[in-house]
Structure formats: structure tokens, C-alpha cells
Image 1 (cartoon, rainbow, N blue to C red):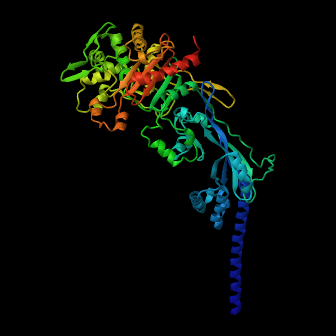
Image 2 (cartoon, helix red, strand yellow):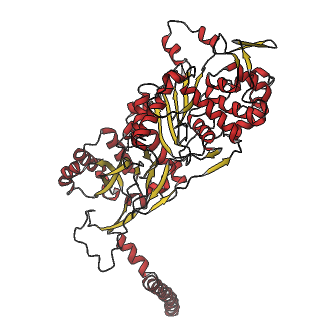
Length: 625
């Protein structure tokens, strides 16, 4: 009986063995198929992955294109710098803190940065371990040479070249060039494909022309040893190491700006706050654009901005970071009077001989409106009304025009609309149309007094200095509203130029006789006794034509309520001074706008500034005639 049981047990063992052998055979067969698949079908892919274990990919950052003036000066360029990076994979394990402290002692890293680095390396996992991390940047060549001998024995450290943006003219051209800064998360979404270590334009030309200036990244593969050091002699002929792709420098930008006019604008404003614009009336080329106070873009374009510098710039009541030529709107004051004057002639509500009586004040309904000349101008016709800037003349003119016609005619000259200049963050200004008034002054009635204020450039109308330049240029050139342009051409790395063509936004149909009446009156403003700019114009150069403006920041009643000992508030709420001029008057070529904040009187404060630019343009830009 026992023998029979043993035979049955043997048969059971044999059956189980056959099943086990079958499982083993199938497993070996599947394993062989898998190995064959990986070896034959995906062998190339895994070979490449294995190579990547000893190849380090280094992105080559491009140099930004230069920014140049029309007369060959450099406004922005790049200087070579060096960057020290580490590969986190070589700083892992239990010795993270020790390795970091060793590196910090060599590079002189501050304690705060060392703490941040240790925390980052301790939590770095996966792909993060093989992504280079920058620990020192913007190192000059001599400093890099000093450190290199200490870094050769530190595993996982790589040195690569980088660039720093340099602005040779500094504060003089800051609002033109703008500055670059470390790319933000928002910038990364706006510029897909940019490296997180990149710098991008934050303001000015740097921002508006970012894509042209940036350039294209290159690629370099380095063979490294087991501790992350580069192997100096690398065999690239076998094809195992991918070829180097050189970075391509960004295109350079040549502006229409003339450096001597830009410097003249800075010198003319001096310590006073304000803005200066000079523009070619036939092309829209900006020959000078300066805002004061300015800032030094070299202090803002590094990887780290000093907190004290940023605090000084960002919290100043004088707003040095604001480009007042395009980002601040002002009450245009009497410089606005050319628009209702021309509108009156075009609509036929007045002729050059129509006169109104100015006795100093005008009474209507329950209001009183007074002229700046409390003695009055007596009977005043068109030419004298502009020449001596008689407010009463324009009060009467506004009654005949009406609010709708005045604002519609103003709209033709882009009042209250961006000019379209190739600089970022331009302000619209304000044109108080009927719709605007009803939306912003709910429950109030648009009466004659409101339109009278508009006719003399007060009330709610606001214009940027550049908008004034565009409007006056249109009067001088026969009615063409031009898009102002800073950049005149792009230059690639081979020296090929791509010119930017002038652009006409609108052609305003003006009667030539009416335009000439306005131009003759503006000539009288600066060249005849009694003209508001006559005493302040430089009569040693050919005659210009222009208009002064003095605009109230607060009402006279509010100003009288300021404590007489509060000199700061009294000075900061003084009237703004403006002057817009066209030169030469006989055949205008350029228009200049000068705005002096709290300058008090347009003729006295602003006219000499514009004339300094005219004189510089005449002698240096045109030559003596």
C-alpha cells in the first residue's frame, strides 16, 4: 500500500516539474524577446541615453543686438561676462552642506545664498539633478581667471560665458533705451522658447524691440568625466558628440535719434522736471526724446538690483522711471489754441478779420471768465488772438464752434489718442467729448463754460508732449498725421539693413489759406513785439514759429488757500510751462516741444529750451546757410 502511495507522489512531482519548466521556458522566451526588442529595435535610443550620462548639454546664450543713434553713437551694447554653474547631481547625498560651504568659501557667496542653495540641493530630485544651476554671474574676465584655479578640483562645477547689458550714455538716453531684467513668469509665457536664465527688455526700445534684439540660442555638448569635469581633448569626429550650434547675435537697432540733440535736451532742462521732444515733421523720426528726472539703466540691468536704488527710483515723487514725453499727460494750456483757431477758419465761423472785444473779463449767465491779461486786449482779431494768446477771443470762438465741432476737429489731430510710437506703455491723454463728459460727470450739464475751458487747453483735456508734437507737425506739413518712430532701421549680424518706412496715419484735408493764417500767427508769437515768446526767443538763428502755454495744475482759489510757509507744495503746484515750436518758420523741418513741470510761465521757462535744440540742429545738423 505504501509503495502505491509513493508512485502517485512521484507522478505528482513530475507533473508539477513539467509545469514549472514550462513557466521557466515561457519566461526565458519572453525575456529573450524583450532583450531582442530593446537591443535591435530601441538600441539606438538607449545608446543615446547612455551617452547623455557622460555628455553635458550647455545652452549658449546670444548677445543682444546693439542700439545705435543716427550719428553712430552706441546707446546700448553687451559686454562679455562669465557665469559659474553647478550640476546638482554632484552635490547630492549626505555631504550637500559641506560641499556647498566649500564652494561658497571659494566664490565668496553670502550666507543667505548659501542657505538657499543647500535647501535647493537637498530637495532636488529627478531631472532637476541634471539641470545646471547658476551660483555666480556677471563675473569679469580677471575675476574669472583668479577663481578658475580654485574650481578645478570641485566636482560638478562648469564655467560658461554670458553677457551684461551696458548703456554708455546712461541717464541721457534711459527713457529711450529702457533696460533689461531677469525674465519673469509672465515674460516666459509671452516669449515661449526663452531660457529661464534669460534677460528681456522691461521698458523702452529694449521692450518694444525685444524679439529683434534677443538673438537665437546656440548649443554646445561637453564630454565630462565621472566627477563632472570637462574633458579638455574631445573627439568630435566620431559623431558621438553632437556638433556645436553657435548662438546668433540679435539684430541691432538704429534709431533716428541724434546724440547731440539728446544731450542738448538734457542740458537745457537741467535740474527741472519735465520733458523734451524733437521730431521731423515729414517722416515722424524722433530726433530727441528726453524726460527729467531720469535714471541710470546700468543700475537696473544686472541680475540683482540694489534695494536702495530701486527704492530711490520707484518711490520718488518726481517719478524718474516714468517717460514723461509719452507716459504723462498735461493740460496743454494755450498751446492747444491752434486747434480751435484752425477749426474756426475751416468751419467758417470766423475769418482772419473777425474780432471780439476783450475787456479783461467776460460775463455770461451767472459765470465770469477772465483773460490772463486783466487789462484786456481791446478788439482782437485772429492773428493777434494767437500772437498775444487772448483767452477772451477763444471764449467767443468756442461759443461759435460749439462743443461737438471742437472735439470732432480735435480728434482729427489725434488729441486724446496714442500716437503709435514704437515705445511701450504710451498714454492716451484725454479728449473730453460729449460721451466722455456724460460718462465721467454724471448728473452734470455740459455748459458753455466747460467748452470755453476746453478752447484754452484747460478743464479736462490732457495731452502728452509727443501728441502735441504730432498735432503741430500736421499743421506744419499740410495735414499729415504721422506715426512717430524711434527706430529707423534694423541691422542683422551680416550688416544687412532693413529700413523702417514712414507711416501716415491720416491726411487731414485743410484749406491752404487757413493753414497759412495759423502759421503766420505762430510766426508772430516769437518774432513780433507783443508775442508771448518774443522776449525769450533766440533771434540769432532763422525765425521759428510756435506757441507758448501756461497751464494751471490747480485752480487759483485752491492755490491761494495753500499756507504761504508751505514752499514745497506751492512750488510743486505752480503752473506748468509749455512751448511748441516749428523750425525754420519759412519751410519747417522739425517740431520741438518743451514742458517744464511747475515752470510757471511757458514763454520764460520753456521757449529757451526749444530754441537751444533749434540752434544745435541748425548749426550741427544743417550747417550755416
